[in-house]
Image 1 (tube, rainbow, N blue to C red):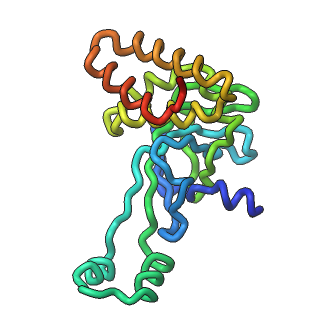
Image 2: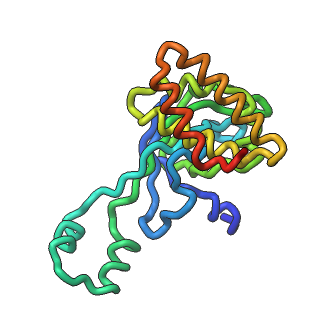
Length: 207
């Protein structure tokens, strides 16, 4: 694996379905790749001709017997702490909801036809991949209707992430189009619409 691939790798698939998947990684590797609302991809074809596209919606750090003991200690030696983070047998789990897939040059904003296989590599989507995937907004429906995720917060985080994939000259129009699409989808629930729009606005830094 190249240095670039290692830098973009989020983890490996633990369990999966067509609606989403969980991947795992070592605790020492948690960084900006593992961010709520990030776009990720994973192959769903052996020849890498098709990828599921998803959004990270949860990061879980499970306990183990040693961790339970260590949290009770008044002082923890630094070497013990580092060893626990580096070598613990329980992986950090990252939960992903599928929002689309690619098949060759085609981009489809719907559930993928099949799930990824266990231990498949999950990687961050590149800026170009995010740009082309988010030119349409069909995935908004997938997120807003998903009961297992914090849908309002997740969609807002995804929009903020996607905005930075756009050139500065296009960013404002992209956010306006997102707002209009949300207004159409949530016209029956103005309170929810107002909440999602408020969540999108703070970090855009767009006038």
